Amino acid sequence: MKVIAAAFVKAQKEFAPALKTATNPHFRSKYVSLDGCIEAVIDALNNNGIALIQQTHDCESGIRIETILLHESGEQLSGGILHVPAPKQDPQGYGSALTYARRYSLMATCGIAPEDDDGNLATERSGSVAKKPQTNALSFFIPGKDAISCPDILTWEQNFDAMSEQLVNSSLPTEDKVAKLKALVEVNLPTLDRLPVDKKVLYIGRQATRINRTKG
Image 1 (tube, rainbow, N blue to C red):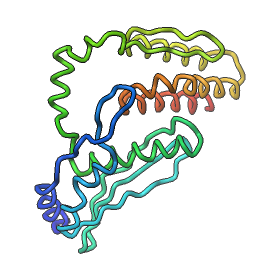
Image 2 (image 1 turned 90 degrees about the vertical axis):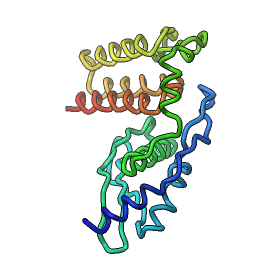
Image 3 (image 1 turned 180 degrees about the horizontal axis):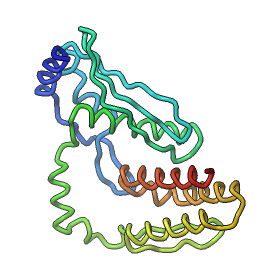
Image 4 (image 1 turned 120 degrees about the horizontal axis):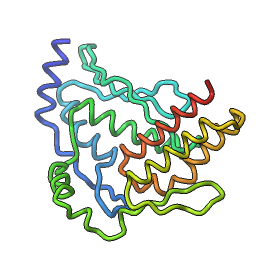
């Protein structure tokens, strides 16, 4: 591992900033796309004899991705396997999960972060983001019923978890429980899409855990 370790250290010194060039239409904010992450590291890696490989692994609930750095000497480094649940069990859902998984796996493996994350975090802590009127309100949807307006993410999470656990502990047949748990995610996708990616993945993953627990 000495050869690839030395080469990776040299490559990392040459990494470019991961620029926020893509736009989130819900928050009108910029974020780093998968293309931006790859562009930030690929030249530096290749110039130091390292190829970038992202390998998928079998997974029924979403995507499992492993970022591998392969040196021309034959040595390799793995960033480990990252699991991202699919928001929907269809091509679009799996495509979205694959993009998220590849981006976050690459960033974690190469040790890169979006440009000016610290600056954005400071802005949020100063309260400038929180002062935007009404943009923090989130709707909690229940299949067949009117939506509930939640003033913040914590209230939405409490409603989502409470309803989910109520379904898990109900006397309904297992198949009905699973169907309703999946439906709860589907009807709340408009709200989930407004959240930061890590939050969205967290809640979908939490629901996938409940579904697996219900199936036994």
